[in-house]
Structure formats: C-alpha cells, structure tokens
Image (cartoon, rainbow, N blue to C red; front, side, top):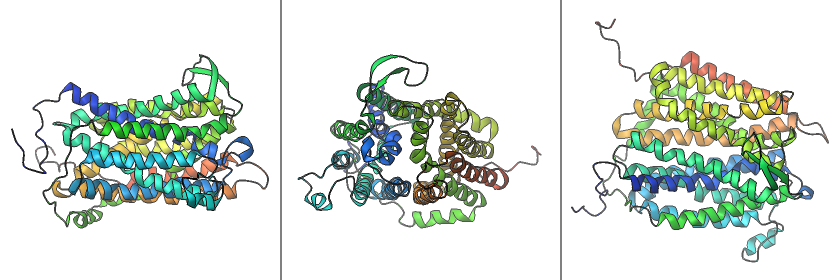
Length: 455
C-alpha cells in the first residue's frame, strides 16, 4: 500500500500492542521530566541562598511560574497547530525542542554563570532573578509545546483515539509520580525504610537537601535528552499537506455567542488563575507544616494518584450526572482543596490527603471542559476551538502570578512568614466563585432537545 507525499500513514485496522507500548513510553517520558522538578520549584525558588535555594521573593516566584507558564501555553498552539501540522514531522520537531529545552534546564540548575553562556557571565550569578526568569521563559517556549505535540502524535497513530488514548495518557501521570519518587529516594534522602505515606519509602534527608533540589533540573534535562533520542524511534508523523480552513480559528470565536461556552470561559479564567498558584505555594506550605524537603515532591504526588482514578471514572460520571454537575464538582474540588490547605491546624496527614482533590479538579473540570468544547464545536472548527480554549487558559498563569505576589505581600508581616491560612482562604473563595458560576449559569447545549414523545 502506498500513500501520497504528506498524507497521513495508513493505520492498522486494530491497534497493535507494540504501538500502544511505544506511545505509553513517550507519555511516561513527556510528563516524567516535568514531574522531576515542578513539585519542588516553590521550595528551592523561595529558600534563601544560605539554605541552598535561589532566595527569590513571592512576587518573583509568581513571575517565574506565571509568565513562563503562560508564554508556553500560548506558544503551544502555534508550534503544534502550524509548524507540525504544515511543515515538519511531529517526532522530529519534538526532538529538536527537547534538546534545546533540556540545555536550558541544565543551565538553570547551575548556581554560577557558565563560560559557555557569555551573556550570563555579564549578568553575574545565574540565580539572579532577571536571568532566571529569561531562562524559565525560554525553557517553557521549547518544552511546553511538547505536551500538545505528543498528544497530536498519539492521535495521528491511533485508529480509535477515544478508546486508546486514555490507556496511553495515564502513563504520563504515572511518569510524573515515578520521577518525583525516584529523585527523592536517590538524591534527597538516605537510609530508606518503609513508610505509610507516599512515596512509601522514607529516610533521613541529606543536610543539603534544598541545595540538591536544584539538581532536579539537571535530572529533567537528562530525561529530556533521552526523550529526544526516543522521539526519533517513534512512527513517522508527517505534516498534513491538505490545507485546513484558514477561517476556522475566527469561526471558533462565534462560540462566544453560545451561553454555555461563555460561562465555561469565565469559569476557566478563574480556575486557570488559582490552578497555577497551587504549584507555586503547595510545596512551601508542606515544608511549613513540617514535611521535610525530601518528602515534599512525593507528598504532592497524592494528587496525581487520585487523578488516575478520577480520569478512569470520568466517562461514567458524565453519563450518570451530566456535564453541568461534573463541571460544578470540579469547581467545588478547587474550593475544598484550598480550604483544607488553609486549615493549617489540621493534622499533617489530613492536609496531605486533601491534595488528592487534585484528581477531582483536573478530571472534573479540565478534562471535562475539553470534552465539552469538542462536543459543542462543529467538526470543521474543533481543533481551532480547543486552541482558543487553550489560549484563554494560558492567560490564567499570568493573573495567578500577579495574584500570588499581591496576596503574599498582604499576608506576610515584615520580617515574618506568609500567613498561609488567610492566603489559601482567599484562593478558596475564588474557587467557590467559579463553582457558583458553573452551577448557576452553565447549561449543557449539546444535549438533544426532548421530543414530544419523551415529554
């Protein structure tokens, strides 16, 4: 069988187990490299240089996590939807981005300027804020789009994505969990013994554990390079030469005329803002309540474990409860999670257990929202509608970064530490507002109208 140049490769009539394994390994590496360092970022960014951290302020933490996250989210649709769809094989573009992004991560992990980067030598120590922010943005530009590209490659190789993709994608979440656990076991602690909390092996932390956390970026860089080499072994996924409707993206804006889409976007903006703050402040909070640096990342993985369970039952929930109820549950998950995080008088185990609400948040809001957009949009603008949704979500981290700095400034007494109770309660109030918006105003416009017979 032959295919025309630029045409998608012919797919087998049924999924081959070997292909599922190959794509699962891809997702494992894709999200494992992020799981190595993102759960730890809040600790080593805020820790003082004397403790081995970068010594940045809460405002600077918001800028680093917010700006880089937003720019990456905004760049992803362009790289995934334009370059990969029109000019370059997906697996090759991913390999190039991973090599470049891994190099930037490696440089970010160095405390002193490298002679290989003369511009940084002029800037002084690499942990100075302006340099680190520029590097974080550069890394995000390279690496954030690989998530969308890995998904599009998977879809291009699958005969039945709705059935096959969840099986493959769950290995990304497993990769995030395993990477964080292994890094903690190997690099942050010693004398491991069994424990009852994740990662179920605990030991004595190294005295310089905070300083060692920066090495998570080096480990992530190595993972990115291994992943780049692996990409070159993946099935060829050439660009689609057929020209898509150039007006599709603008047609997608008509969805704002649908009340359900408008309500969904309002809720998305609120939730995207507070969603990113979780990754900024959850790890410093865990350290504040007594969890050692060596156990912060593994404790946060409770959320990813719950995510696996919730994604598995999402289809059943949508069928039994309906889209409106599921989205509202997702918003309520954010409210409850932040309410627990602010209740610092609770036992440590209760606060750690509340991190499991991340699974409810992610599955019942984010995953369900993407499903709804796909249902609502006409077939010819579905990709553009998802891109539009992704761009609007990409604005959230910028707002979250500003809000993190503002609230930290309001709730940190001079010379003192952040009042996490008041901080998280304000974030919880925003989650409650999003829940009310969804619960009171969202109506599923994809449900068929009742027939006279049904009435």
